[in-house]
Length: 456
Image (cartoon, rainbow, N blue to C red):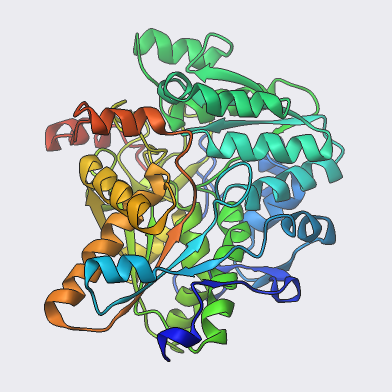
């Protein structure tokens, strides 16, 4: 199809928005392994999880056979404030690169939280409100999830307690202030507020924290606060379910113009945005209806898919959460604080881990300075300042487009641009001043943490 027939931005009508979330696990031949109770090492039951999560979210988390979950009307109405989100043909980027490749990106930064996280935040807040809870607790890394959840809780009149990874809390003061605008309380983690926080501080004095630490604190707070439950912004299958709206919309938009991507790329931290983007396409691949190449992109400083081990591990540093079989660096692993993005989780979503283990998805790791070089190039060419997380996908999308330039292949590339970088200017400043490093953990360092994995 000619350039003139495909607009720069493809917008769907409200009537074309997904009416149901897609559960990729229903089509998987090899299902992800179940969550295990850390005390009994037996599969977690809904009853066992009920003290931590909302009831309806537990049902979504454990269901691996139901392909579609209807999106409640209250959530769809909220979605309409910022969805459908645009699918953009990156004509300017293609021209500057001089590549025959066709590049598309699904842009999820057109809401106040600045990212895709709101897709799941509003769903989780809705189910908490429906259950009659007072509020929820959570963790946040770069701050996008905390911002999104504070917005969602404000909308439904819920209290929101956020434990923010300490290095991000210090690096991104404006992100935490946005959370406070929406009424959330924000605590740097690890903190002295919780028993597990005090324990982590005693064992790691001066630590800059990690998502694993913050998760432990948020879970403890929910379990010791009447009328509260814990909610999570990534990693869990329920979150990937909600984020499937990204991929469903992207596929509908591409189908309208008869476009089929050859390569689909997403950044990978806990897995929510990547899983949401690839879900319907991966479903087609598994069912034998189409073939795609999927690339998960992670930082060299926290390389769970590329250098981790596929095994059962705790989802949190405090070891109070269930065990998940995933690619992991070890729950005690704390990434370098020099890494500016939110991709600082020690493990990967169990569904994506299974897909990678089965050879259905590739994974690569990239250096932070290379990521910011791509981010700045993209901002100058496409006019959007990208978040560091999304810029990992941009880096590899550019690399793949340049390969097409070398070979002359006219491949179609789709990647997820899941957020804006306007709260990440300290990181951009460090990049410009030459103060940004490319810390890569040594094999010896990683082996130290892997040796502590639970014997399951």
